[in-house]
Image (cartoon, rainbow, N blue to C red; front, side, top):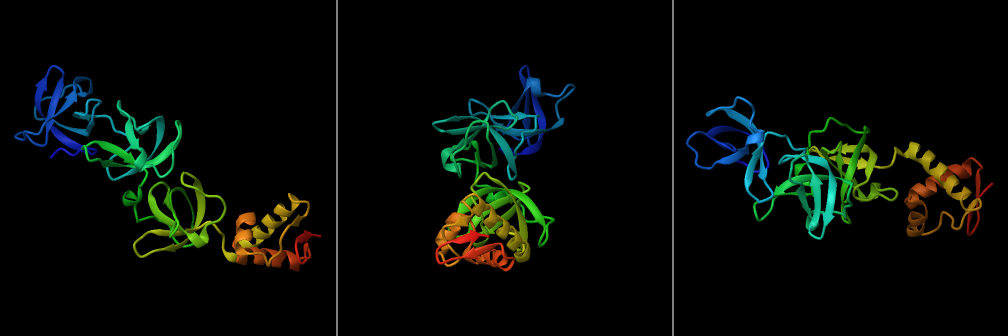
Length: 277
């Protein structure tokens, strides 16, 4: 059976002036053309060739000996070659660019941008790209608890947090409580593994361990004060929403950082502000 979107070994069953026809065995009627310019020199009837199967500009199934940057079941970073009213087109190393429909974009993409995608077959039996790569990410990463990893955020969820492809390969999640700063889909991040789940997926945090993070939070608070005439226009009794908006920290993280600075004698707290000494 000839499989769209996959590399496979097919047999030469007919030779014509403009190429060769390939099939999955000598007696199979389902045949596909490998154009003449793609046929390896010296090929003959009965030879097996490893090819990739896709559709050409006229939507005909066709074979190529070239290896695309993306095959079915995998994920890859592909560059946007152009955007149209129907979606975007991606350069995947073949003559015909790969379509990324609007409905398969987790964010609006721009020409020249690299996007993380996988393949699927649409209702018209055509190969298309999707930015919803979750089903194709692996769960056998070599990482353990407290390892530092890098990855790309590919989707966000109000309920769960942010989904990350570690090394653009492994499935991971930053839970909502571990989010920090202005992170959005398409961003490349560095994070700490907090858990390797039973199913192999990774749980991540953008924060360091508490004692390390407290030092960083304290430094960030001082930096914010320096950019605001030496004080913050609220204190540690402010609402969690205000603290999160102004500092990117949770209230507990903010209070730990403020407590450290207070103990070191670097700040003072009034009824309305926190001021650097």
